[in-house]
Image (tube, rainbow, N blue to C red):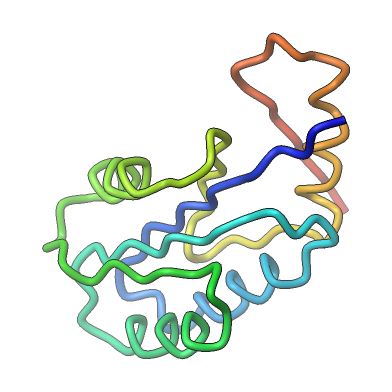
Length: 124
């Protein structure tokens, strides 16, 4: 079975209070073939510094800090343009994913190989 890669796109606007937990949830994934693209949507707080600190420790992360505030859709589109993998996961800067999230998505793909969309929800 071929392992898929996932580009995780995190649009962020003044998310200093939540971005670290969001990034840590990605770093705790059991599935490791991912990249993170954090897109600046007009930071005016410490979001950029926090995100850049994580990116310096993990080569799979990039912070794009050149976009003025244009809204979440424009930030996601910027992330899509920069994505290196075919599979995309949109993760808001105040959300997080459980450690098995990407692994479960990857395992569900062979069951639905013609899918263009995989959705996973976990309620605890």
